[in-house]
Image 1 (cartoon, rainbow, N blue to C red):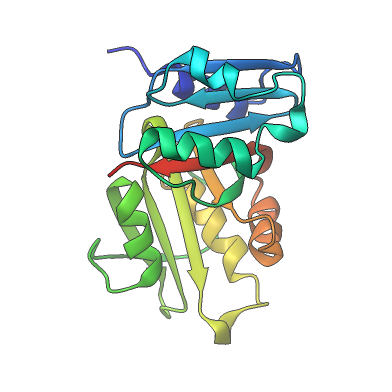
Image 2 (image 1 turned 90 degrees about the vertical axis):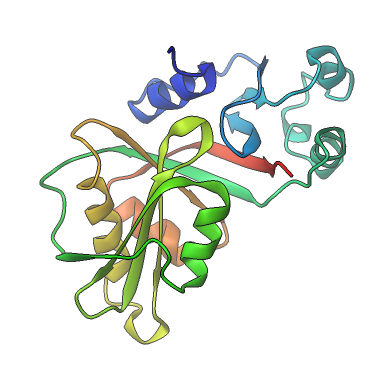
Length: 214
């Protein structure tokens, strides 16, 4: 079975081949999994959702890049999908590297009682949960948008500002195959997490808003 076209776009972007800044709006079928998505690259937008392309273009000024992620369009799309737009996140990507980790991980139960795990379970499958040996941080890996590998992490308040976030992000790269694309979604205002993921070798490729399905 061929990958969903959104997955192909994301894989290429993770390898450095981002869509051309051509002002285009691509409208793709809904991706597999529990969410639809709007993914913004530099002057290039991808809408992957179960909607009529003509309806999307009728509600979107194709030439106004600043309006692509504006609340008006996102709220309309959410209503059309019977959903609500989730947060507007920065998307970063890196390739897997088996020798990237400098932290010993301990695998935990995928049903671990932790808010980060609960959030991941709503939008991801094939969850794998890890912590450091001292259980000061948690790392969650799973299949997310269009089947891509995604990770998230959280560090206990008492262990912050010591580099553990960066080490967890590095360790995540060792958990997927070499050269396998791995993605992180981070709220732009979460500067500490953005810095940690950048320091682990991830590069910003764009931004996205997800629309959870009922």
